[in-house]
Image 1: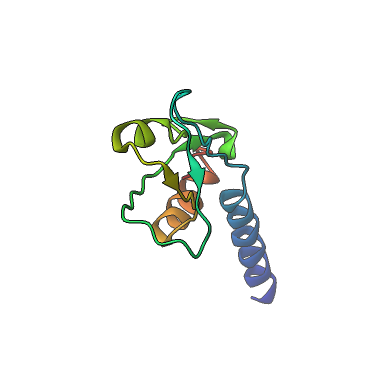
Image 2: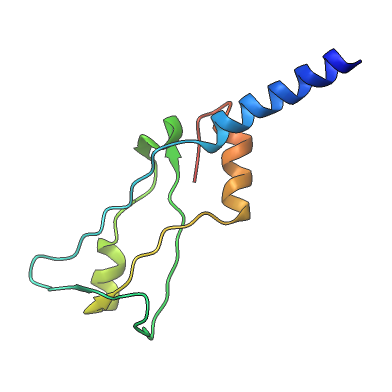
Length: 105
């Protein structure tokens, strides 16, 4: 019984490590004619937008747009702060789909 438990724990650990690892990138781009300043953590900014980026091959290739160009072009912001993070739903998607289909958020 102990051996079976150890094998299950090992399998879960390996699948979790495969599903939760990767190399992700977000490209910070703006139009050539629009100078953008990056804000510090303490600056208060009036606008906030978030979006998910999907990747395959554990983050090597992005399926959806991983640039900030579209957001910056539509909002006409001059000062921005870019923060990347993974929420609980992102971890869950990456855990379930990352190990088998290599899809991550």
